[in-house]
Length: 388
Image 1 (cartoon, rainbow, N blue to C red):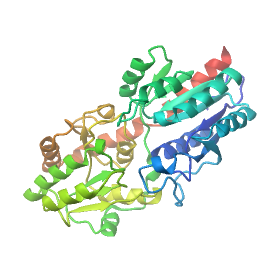
Image 2 (image 1 turned 30 degrees about the horizontal axis):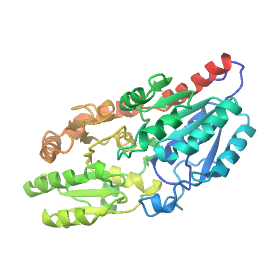
Image 3 (image 1 turned 90 degrees about the horizontal axis):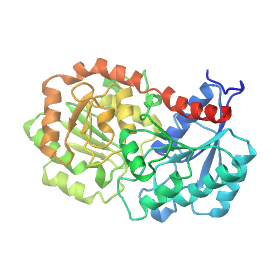
Image 4 (image 1 turned 180 degrees about the vertical axis):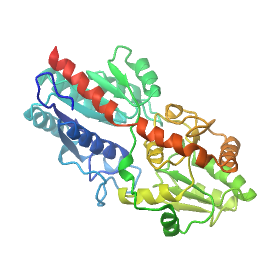
């Protein structure tokens, strides 16, 4: 176990969404706290009382009643749009006398809130601030995104980036920033070793070759190109089913019309809801291939879930995805927005028995994407600062 230079565990405040908030950012924070504890450090999580105003959130609910796969104790104190709680959170964080603070960053919406916290923590509290960046700028950009991002991240002492794509974006915005470039670690906590493939398929009523699209649906995810590709393949009998698993954050009507127009009714299943942690394993165990036809991307936690299950992926060569999917080894990469190329890659996968060929490489990939480097990047920075 790594410890600070003075021989004591590091006390680290972690600010971001945790259960009952749902989704990948909350899951990431829970695992991060768990990994810090496993290395004998002392994380304390400060959670939101309100993450987004309801009128800005595109989904049905921001929280879930379902138990998380990994739980973390948190203090719900921060309201993203109430400056009084920003001051309160600063006081609560400073009160535990942390060696450093980690803020989860994924959207410029939190720019004013996180800039205020960072400013207070660094300049008044003299506490080092680390930003753990899931994205630098969002996929669906707005005019205010760049200035808000520069404002907040400009107050960071150190940044942990999860892709080279994020590095390119950060260097354009803040060329003098200190950072480490890593990758999104695997999400192995979804695994259920006792769940057999046949059991998972029987539970979902699946027969034949089945594709999986997993995650909430937004325009940049490129689902329409997968539907076009699936229509071509289903017409040839190359695949049987497509499961689209995730809540629609846009109007699902055009997709339903497309399914009807392509004659795919009964072959495409839309699971239009948030899937709890306990259900994830069923879908990844039951399907033959994950397909993510993204038009843009920074990195993908969904790919790391798939690799934990040794499930190959066909995805696009955008953003940081080629950094974690090795073409022809752990999956196939295709150009974005190209349904013909997507169909050809899926057909090639099944025709060449690539699932069996990729299995040993996927096991190695799952081992490669461990949480150790993420924790090490944060703790090494804090230890250096304590030693100065």
